[in-house]
Length: 199
Image 1 (cartoon, rainbow, N blue to C red):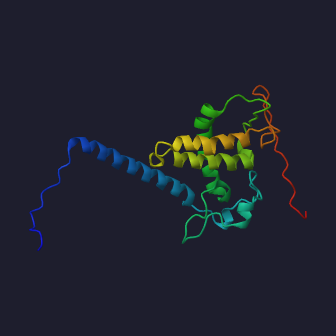
Image 2: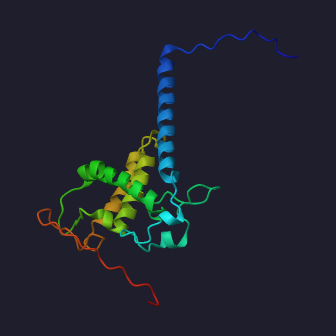
Image 3: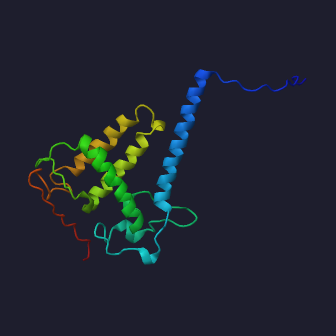
């Protein structure tokens, strides 16, 4: 026997639940907008072969740009969100966004004093290793400080991403090893990379 059908009544949501519902919808809209902006940054105005800049001073012959199509293809979208895998135009846009995050959040909060044991370079954007590590740190920050990461997301970001990244960046033999060791005496020098085998 089937249940008798009742005339459907409108759904009533208690007022105290409406606030939760509005907050959830607002959060989802903001998250969707943020993902759309990130996707647009990575996919809009893909550079053609004519737009590529082989003399890119930051990563002129990086393995990522030489070995893989950085922008992906029309069917699959971007091959990677990692900054070293991007074409020249997308790289410049991503570096500008990264620079904003580094200068307005990372350094004011976590910069600490510049010493011989913790060097830093004001021209960090010219150090490919620093750009790569800071970008990876920023990507992790975006994911782990999002509401969806839960209450332990920020702690995980500090433990698994921030601390190891700063340890590698600011070690005396790291990418800034030949740069500033005193805030009063700014200095910048790129360290030579090892020569590839057979050269």
